[in-house]
Image 1 (cartoon, rainbow, N blue to C red):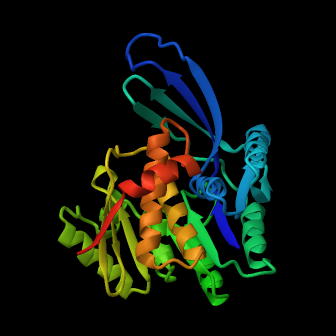
Image 2: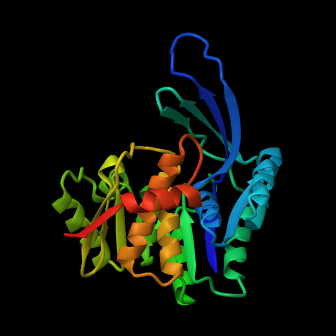
Length: 308
């Protein structure tokens, strides 16, 4: 079974407008309410592509209840830690005529000590070791920045492959535990390196340093430039057409596609293709929508992966 862990989920409210016009009121032509958070999105894409997973998430207040209800409507299997403070709300403004969006993210609710402990207990108390566990997203206030390291250490000890998709200190500390795969974007990888990684050779060299520290696979997403996957022995470049940078959910969809490949026994090159196909499918679906089977099947032939 696949598990995803989302410690800072969100209710994404998308306001659809015709075009951006700053300095004067703009009328929304539609308002959409969707569950969000990186791990939650991975589970949603997996579900859309025919693979079940267990989504572990924190939820609080009326907003948290709405998020859980929306996830249940999509058929997700949930394990929930209830918290006192309300789940955060993010706002996405999507200009349909310009095919552009603005995302305003909230930092998330403060988590009390006993609530954080219940998260640890839930993961430690799993009766069956997951085949794959996805740890992704930001951390709410009150959760230790080394939680991904602790969970990764425990999961690896039970034979679980951990996919880590975070940024900053939680990512750096998580890497120390040797997850199976990390998927930073280029900005996040540069942040780890402490300098801007400008060229492909610099990206690959630093990714190899991370692999030397115990990570098996490093996938670096680069927006419209595609992605690079580095393993202990190979480097692959993946390109896709018509991709815009910072498209909401594309990175999460890439993780979902790769998880799907690994869980179904595909090799890493094939799994990389599946990740890129899922990411492109999310972009093709448009606006706040994520990949589904129809768009995935349309996207897959457009993906090019080559060994470099």
